[in-house]
Image 1 (cartoon, rainbow, N blue to C red):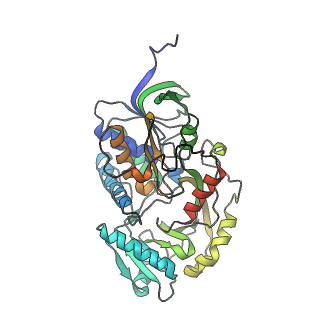
Image 2 (image 1 turned 90 degrees about the horizontal axis):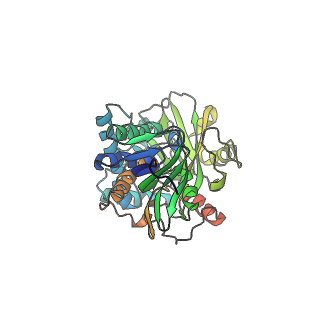
Image 3 (image 1 turned 45 degrees about the horizontal axis):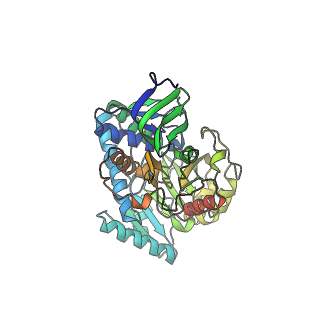
Length: 414
């Protein structure tokens, strides 16, 4: 007979100590008085893909229901700083969208309309306005220039650490160096997790394991509609045209985004043919991981440069000091993977962030925490249902991998 006398238990187990796991833990710890909330992290908190993100906190979204989720992140940053006494060093520099082709100008105008209807501050600028704001940026006449002055950016590692520290101060338990090997399922109920230090029973298990979340779930018959897709960027050397207080810039014609990195410039491309990874081939950690295709990003850089240098001619004379690569879970429709799965009790997903995990972390954390506590979520989670593409999802399906890769290529917002 199984010995259950010494079986460890928690009310809620969160798998993953990144920005989403940390956010869920933070919101739970504010509301789950008397319940044991336990975060399990395979390595050290905040050191996975959260630490590799560009960290753009863009408020403008073509889907209006996403805007409150970003707003929640801004609110969480203020609360965390008050709770912990630490500055998270968010830079509220504003975001500049610059579109040249008529198609992308139309998209920017749609984005402006949705943002304005949601009460966000939107300004239209001209080249004279933007020249002192972003000295390196060269723009043709007739470009549409939309500026959202209240936007900011933040370091993903710092934000994830902030959520974790605040959650711990409010009562959550954080356990590092503890890998979840599998979910424990009996019939239609998830009853806990098996870890490298032994089993832990739980009434609710929240899968916030980032790009590893899908494989964990699939091993017990739950298919999450997402795939790990490469997100990468480059950082230049110091230059007098860059400063940390400049706006970050979205350039849809070049499939590019930029933001300051001190007195350097960080820039990335959403290449037409991205790189995805079969979940079975994922490493245990991202640091030092090399992609089989285009391992050093040269192919993507050479492909993206011709259009990008039209906006940034000086780049050809400025050295690149760093190349940073990571993974993000994308879905075919750019929505997230959140909440429950009909027919399965005790399981919640907090993943599929579609490259917006830093910006959406507050909204995702709050909504999933409310579900876990059987409260109505503050936003409608119907568009993010786990089963919206059907119940029989295979996360290793090459067709799904391509759909998710294409979704990243089509993004124009942050």
